[in-house]
Every structure is written in structure tokens, then in C-alpha cells.
Amino acid sequence: MCQSNRTKYKDGMVKVLSQKEWERLNSWLHKEEINASKCQREFEERERIKQESYEIHKHWTNTVMGMRNRKLEAREERLRKEEEERVAVDKAWAKQQAEERRQKLCLARTLKLYTVPRIKHFHTALHIGDAMKENELQLELKKLKSEAAAKKGEIELEAMKKSFEEAEKEERQKYAERQAAERAISEEQLRQIQERRELEEREKAELVAEREVIRQLAKEAEERNFQLREEKCRLQRKAIQDQLDEIEYKKKWLRGQRADEEKEDERELLFVAAKRKIGIMSLEKEAAAKAARDAVREKMVDFISDKIQKENAFREASLKAAMESDNAKWNKRVEDEARKKEDTLKEIEAHRQKTLKENEELRVRQAEEAKEDLERRKALDEKHRCEDEERKAQNRQKCQELVEIYKQEIKRHEEEKLKARLEDTKYLQSVEEQEEMFQNYAKRAIKNCEETGIPTYAMKKVANQKLIDGFGITKAETDESEECELLPDLPPFKVHLSL
Image (cartoon, rainbow, N blue to C red):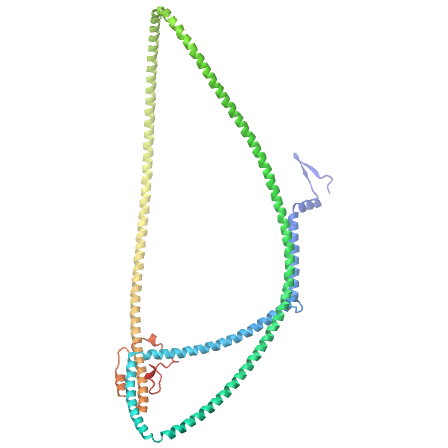
């Protein structure tokens, strides 16, 4: 360590500090940052310990959080199973609804085809054959009735007894089956109700225990929040008191400032009053002086009137002297005017020279401006030329784009023509398919009618009539599907009744 801590350095003194003194001063200067970093490290250490503790015991089953997690997992598993059961039921119901929709859609498609004029004509022909067959059956039935009139009573009695016995037996069997099904359903419902009650009781007990734990935690949290609110209110009251003290200090300062301003205003008012009083005194003095001058003037008039006569005697003597004096003044005046005229001419000449110089400068400046204007016009012409060339290039580009658009339109028209030809081909194919479907349906119906003895002449006549547009409906309206039979085989004597 050196003997002295001070060393001469030019005109001043430099203090040499030891390492300990330097560290002490440095720590004192940066104590706020050191304390802040220390508090931050302590806070991070506490948070780390808290997180490690939580990670260690969060899965323990003998803690509140562990019990709660276990209950939540059990509840989630139960809800998952219930959701799976509901999903299975929903899927089954959705499949059933889809099947019903498919059947309804098939029926709607069939009824849609039944409204086609050609099918209607065919069914009308079927109805005619059916009516003819019905007429033949009516005649045959009348004949059979006349033959069976004698044995009608016995046959009806036997048939009635037999139908009564069969109906009674069937009713007893249906009643027994219904009773058994109702008993099974009631037992299953009672079992489900009992299970549901037990499950609700267990859930209620779990909720009561959980509610007690939550209430205790809420009470502790409320106590901590109350303490925090008290501390916050104390700090707010202190801050408000500090603000009130500052406001009171500002009020006192403003009152002192206002008093100083009032004193200054009072001094200004006294000065104005004194100035006004001095003005009034000066006016009074002027009025007195004017009165004195008027009195003197009157005295002078009297005195002059007395002296006029005395001066008339000297007038002639003084007239000559006055004329000489006037002549001298006139000559002096002429000389002054001549000198002034000469000065004026000099000023005019100087002004003319100045004007000529300014005009010359103006001409030079105008020439320069004209040159600059010419350069500017040349630049504008060059700019306009560039713009014209750019505009021509843009027009050429637009023409090329229009050519491309025209080519694209030609290509689109060709594609549309090709698409129209394909649609016509599809339409003709659809018409052929509809014709084939109708012919198959007509053949099946005619075959069934021939097997049952219904006259088929009208149906064959309608079936042999070919139309250009098939059924008269589009492919989209029929919306054929492999799962649906659009024109199914219906039982005889029933085809026309469903229309």
C-alpha cells in the first residue's frame, strides 16, 4: 500500500483508492441493482423449489390434489363410456334413418316416373285390361253365386266358427306375449333406475367432500385477499395523503404568487393615477397660461394701437430699407430655386441611369429565364416522347392481350361446342336407357297380365309407340341408383291403384 493517498497531478489532486474502498463505493453506487438482482434470484429460487415440490407430490393419492385428479379421471372415464354408448346409439339411429331415407327416395323416384305421360298411358291401358278382366270376373262371380246360393248358409256358419276360434286363439297368444314383454321391460327399467340412484348418491357424496375442500381453500384465499386489500388500502391512503400535502403546498405557493401579482397591480394603478393627476395639472397650467397670453395680447393691441401713429412716421424711412431687404431675399430665393432645379436634374439623371441599368438587368434575366424555359420545354418534350413510346408499348401489350383473350374465347367456344355434343350424346344415351327400362317394365307387366289372364292388346299398342325424348325428363330428374329399382314389378290389379 502506498504511503500517501494523494498525488499532485498538474494543478489538481487525484485520490488513489484501495481495492476495498473501490469495491465499497461501487457496491454503494449500484446497491439498488444489486438488491434487485438478489431479490430476483431469491424469488426464482422459491419458485423453483415450489415447482419441484409440486412435481413430486402432484400424483400422490393421499393429497387433496391427488384425490381430485383421481376423481376427475374416473369421471372422465365414465363420461367417455357414456359418450361411446351414445355414439353407438346415434350411429345405429343414423343408419336406420339413412335406410328410411333411401327407401323414401326410391319411392319418390318411382312416383316421379309414374307421373311421366308415357307411363300414365301404359297404366291407363293396364287399367282398361284390368277393367275387362274385372268384368269377366264379375260375370263368373255372378254365376258362382247363383250355383253356391244353396250351400251358402252352412259354409258361412262353418267359416264363421272357424274364424272365431282362430281369432280367439291368436288373441290369447298375443296377450301372453305382450304380458311377458312388459314384465321384462319393467324389470329392466327398475334395475336401471336403481343403478342410476346409486350412481347419483356416490356422485353427491364426492361433490360434498369436494365442496368442503374448495370451501376451505376459498376461505384461505379470502383471508389472503383481505390482507392484500388492507395493505393496498394503506398504501393508497398514504399516496392520497402525499398528494393532498403536495396540493396544499401548491395552493400556498399560488396564494403567495397571487399576492405578489396583486401588489404589482396596485403599484401600476398608483402609477396610472399619478400620471392622470399630472396630466390634469398640466391642462390646468395650460389654461392659466392661455388666459395670461390673452390678457397680454389685449394689452399689446392697446399698446400697438397707440404706437401705430408713432410708427407711421418711420414707415417711409423703413419702407426703403424693407424693399432692399425684399430684393435681397428674392435674389437669394432665385438662387436657391436654381440650385434646387440643378439638384433635381441630377437626381433625374441618376434615376434614369438606374432605370436603364435595371432594365438591362431585367432583359438579361428575361433572356436567362427564356433559355431556362426553352430547356424546360425540351425536357418536357423529351418526357412526352418517352410517355408516348411507353403508351404505344402498352397499347401493343394490350393488343397482344386482346389477341390472347380472343384466342381463349375461340378455344372456349370450341370446348363449349364439344361439351354440347357430349351432352347431346349423353342425352341420347339416357333416352335409350329410359326406353330400355320402359320396355323391360312393359314386358314384365304384360307377362304378369298374360299369366293372370288380363287382356294385353292396349298395353302392347302403347308399348310399341316410341317417343323421341324417352320419358320426357332429364337424367338428373331420375337420379338413377343401383340400390333402387325405379320401375319395380307390382302385383297384378295393384299397379294402377297406387297412382
